[in-house]
Image 1 (spheres, rainbow, N blue to C red):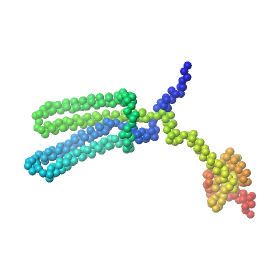
Image 2: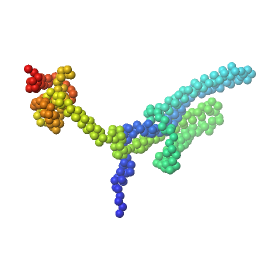
Image 3: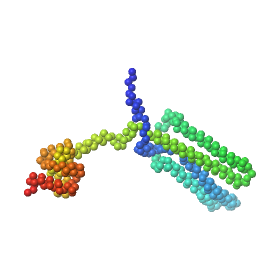
Image 4: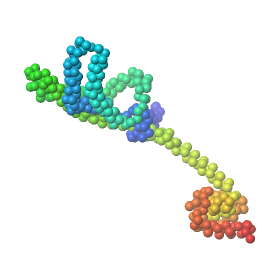
Length: 366
């Protein structure tokens, strides 16, 4: 008969089933490691959409600039052929470079901005270099084979197949709509023929971009769902994290008790300095001291309830300190005045009468 430890199986070996949502600390640690919910398709789809939309809107201006450059060079061929020098070469390069910058800078700026916004929208702004650091665990062939046949790879394969099917369908339907003009393109002049090809490419590209954006959004939603699922924690992991961040509750309780014990000992040591102890008479005890050189009003040196009150009274007996029973005053002092604080003005009269009585008993007043 085998002796099995059923608790081992109940715990799952690693703290149990991961049923708890990730804590903010775990999500923050994962972000620092570069682990975030991110879809690569979002960035690609956004960049393609920006490019085709820009060319659709500003394509005419762009083509005019490019044709202007060719016309400029073509119109000055005879000058360059018979009198080419450094000055003419610099003029030609300056003109061409300036025109190309005018053409390319807007689209490049929009592409950079679009890529930046697409990434920041997904992962927020927290740069980290940790994903670029080499990890030898990634070189493990066994884990590599497991990832090759994982559910994520199957999803990526299905997504790629869907992209190809959609791409083929969009291109086919777009060409079908323009097929009558395309087959007769040889009958058109150069400029109308080029315009037809460019318009067909741009319209097809925009349709593809819309579909790719939809696929990218679906992929992003899947990646977020997968990330939340991967980040889940077991109940034991949540407890361990709490202990590591907030401290072990048992240790914190022992520290708190130790601090209270030290504070109580210091309080008991100050009782011999008291002028009077006011009691409830059995449940509460408050020790007061008045020294006009130290404070304007009497201060509470010690206070306690039940067992601690009994200890305060015993210490008062041992040190010949007067004990006065006054239930209302004892309750007000115990519940409203902290250790080391002066009594409030509304209690001056009551405490003054008691101190006068005590001083008279001790012969401190004539």
